[in-house]
Image 1 (tube, helix red, strand yellow):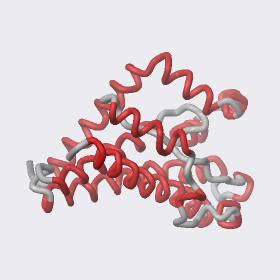
Image 2 (spheres, one colour; image 1 turned 30 degrees about the vertical axis):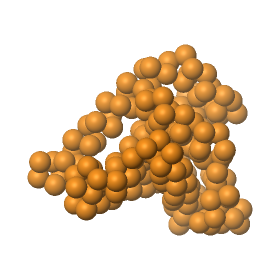
Image 3 (cartoon, one colour; image 1 turned 180 degrees about the horizontal axis):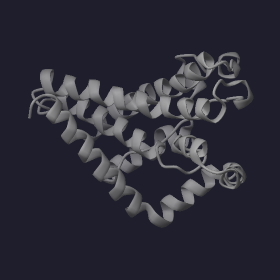
Image 4 (spheres, one colour; image 1 turned 180 degrees about the vertical axis):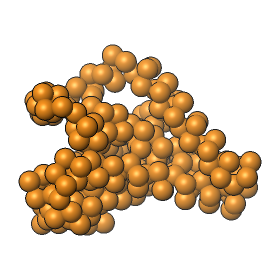
Length: 210
């Protein structure tokens, strides 16, 4: 598959994956008692409601073309934590819903590529391979426990009070902090995400008996 079609596949898969990722956050929050995402229009399948032009599109495409690990994000879903059941643990469930959705999508793409894409050898299989790579990259990146990434929500539920206060203060600058850390330690992030992705793919092959 040539570069143009690879970019098209990345673009389409990224949009679908990120929309479902954000909708998962919103629906779990809604099930746990918070309607903020619903009334903000973030339970919609309309990608314009969720896309962040830089994190959702430009960063994944540039990383793919440069041979780096693919990761990114979308506009955060608004959540009022005071409305959630189970308080901090409710927010942890909301946070984990997005990466879990990407994991499920990666498994679906893997099974499609393995059984109907000639074990990822034909064009359809290569598209499915991009789906696996994109979704595992998004999952692993978002599980990094740095505010405002999803992994921080689980850490927040476990952390003592003084750590929670520190995380709340970091949250305001979280996106900038993530960019700085990527610039300074991009190779480390890449190595960790690559290792995690390879482990997940190995588990998927075990799942189909290989």
